[in-house]
Length: 255
Image (tube, rainbow, N blue to C red; front, side, top):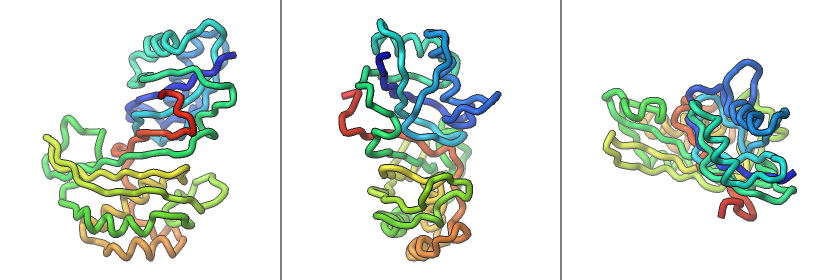
């Protein structure tokens, strides 16, 4: 059957995460249920990344197979109709070769994390950012972040329930910068790698927030990394500021 790549946007708050779980709302489960409305059989889709509960996506990628006769445009329109009222949207769809795999063909995952720094409660951005009530020094945070870039044993920044075979990963990019918005100053983290460990990005952000707040020195991040001990990690940030914003492939299916 023809294979289609789906570019998916979702608000993570109502879901237990991407991965289907019995009797619990998941992004994967909602999309598979919508596919079953279009083609009455059991559907199993694969995604580039399994986001956790409360984590959002602007450009998650998954693939599915549908019978002959479906076009990419018709499939995306039909899925969006049947996904209502879930906060999930198929923002692009493309027919791909049969050997395309949303997870195993991916060469890069890119995440964005947003921290809002203001004392007044967030209103329009509630549930979309991690709010802290103090200023953050982005220069110090970047100094700490620089120690994490490259190939390392990331045991310190790995969840204890992580199922990856090895804690060794290569972090290609971690940039910390400040953005002025109408709602206040946000600190953004642009994080890129081929793959990530469970809770790795949130562990980075929670630790670097302590550096920006002045509780940790930048060099403490390097020491925590070298410890290869989960207990050396700083606090893990909450999920609502995290977004999967891009997945890179050798041939972009949506180009």
